[in-house]
Image (cartoon, rainbow over all chains, first blue to last red; front, side):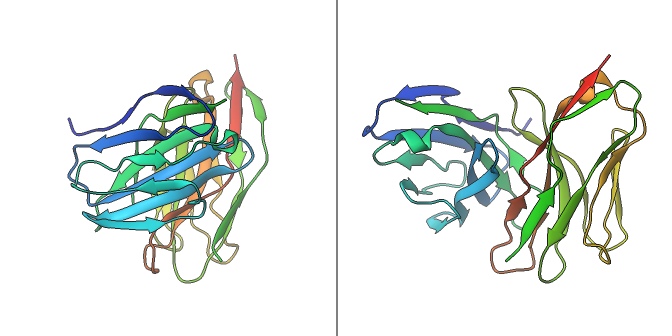
Length: 112
Length: 114
């Protein structure tokens, strides 16, 4: 079955370190998204991509970057982790001709 | 800009009680509307959706009707079960707009007691 996976599921890091969260989907969807989930804020969009080599900033993109070198993967990089980036991160994908997104299981990131 | 407002939680109900979670939206154009559910420790799953005014989305006993006149998409279920305990998110997709991304409400946590 097609799916969307995220790794690692849990990560603890220190302030100032670079961290990369992986997202991999096997649906061949051309749209992919990264969100963060925080209490009292719901889900907020960090970055998104509508295809290979396409990346766009979302609502809360400062301190994050993404790159899209193939259809299946959209890694999220925190260039210099900060305590304010402690959160649960969700990746999602969508076929470009539809409006339904499919979510991964999430990565819980703690920045100490 | 586009936004979604849903009722604050947490909501605690007894099994077999009636559930309503209110959701209203602000949007230009004609967005699609969604309810997503997040069970403990999991990612979000699409529960139901509606793509135009007066459409009713339904799934697993849950229903929501797209009301353009009141800009609402309230989630209802006639008889909740313990297994319905989860966080519920209302969302809109301005697919016809320049970005076509999801905008979420803050979520409503539902706890159902036996």
